Image (cartoon, rainbow, N blue to C red; front, side):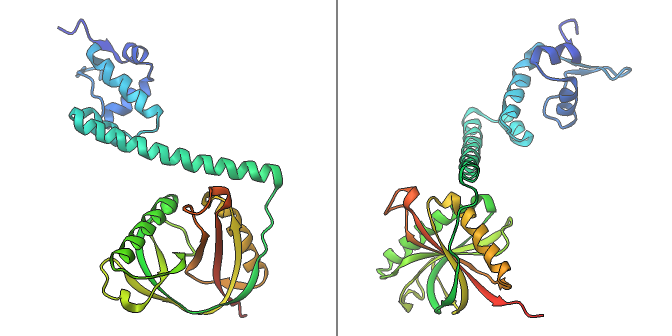
Length: 269
C-alpha cells in the first residue's frame, strides 16, 4: 500500500528542498507527510505532494511569509489570486524602497554627503485644516500621498479655498503605528467639514533647510538638518514639518522643492 511513498530524503531531492525545511513545514502544518512511521518516526511523502512542495519553495524564494503560503495553498483560485496579488504589491513597494536607497548610496559614493544650508529663524503660528493617518516608517510616502488626496477632496467638496503650500506633519521618532498628518491653511469655515480637523501649529524658533529632488532622498536633508540642530545645542520638538513648495503635479522628481522645518528650543543645563 505504501510502495509508492517516498522517504523524506528522496522527496527532498525531488523537490530541491532540504530535509530540515521539510521537517519545519511539517511542524508548522504547512506540508504534512502522508505517513509517519509510529516506531521510527520516519516521514513519507506521496509523489503528488511534489507540486505543493515546489510551490512552497518558489514562494519562499520570493520571501512570501509561510502564513501567506499556507492560506494560498488552501484557497480557491479567486482567493488565491487576491493573496498573491497582495504579495506582488508588497514586493513592488519593497523594490521601490530599495531602489531609492540604492540611489542615495550611489549619490553618497559619488559626491559624499550633500551640503545643505541650515538656518535658524522664527516660524509664525499657522492654522491648518488637516487629515490624519497611522503608518509605519516604510509606508510614509504612500500614506502621505493618500492624505493629500483625502485633504484636497474634502476641501474641494466643501468649496473651501486654501493657501499653498501643503504641509506634512511628522513625529520626531519614526516607528510603527506613528501618526502623521497633511494640512493646508484654510479659513475656519472648514469647521464641521467631514474628514477634516483643525490644528494650530504654534509659532516660535525653528531650524530649517530646503531639499531639491525626490522625496525618497529627503533622508539626506534630514541628516544635515538634525546634525545642525544638535551641533548648535538645540533640542528638536515635534511635529517636524514639510512644506511642499513644488510638488509632483508641478515638476519632475529631480525638481521637487521641499522645505523642512523643525521647531527647536535651547538645551538648558
